[in-house]
Image 1 (cartoon, rainbow, N blue to C red):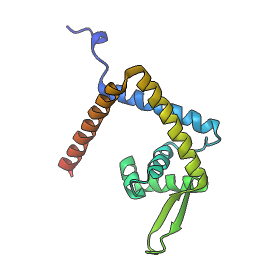
Image 2 (tube, helix red, strand yellow):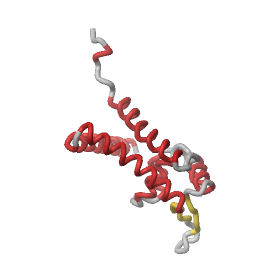
Image 3 (cartoon, rainbow, N blue to C red):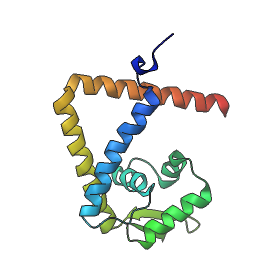
Image 4 (cartoon, rainbow, N blue to C red):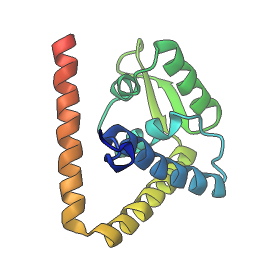
Length: 152
């Protein structure tokens, strides 16, 4: 019989708690800077738009929420001054969503909080272990993308 207290903590639990470390640091930094009204998934949207590597539609797909929930999230971010929504001049049927000055400032605050956690983690673990952790997480993401392709 195996003693459950000697079993390693399951990786999904570790990932959840690690994600919370980043989220809590970002939320605290944002609140201290006056950005305490960002809805739950708003951090992800603002952060992803700040990186500029993905269109909003892809960012929303990655959230895995309904179109209604996504629309409500974008509406809230627009109303709170983080996003600007305009008709695309090249295609009047489309809307473009960009970060406002407030959104860019919130993103910078969020990034600074992430960088601080990254620095503390690197100081504790070293660059090589961080590289290995990134490799493991990237492989886990690839596995997930493969599973999504299998079911679709």
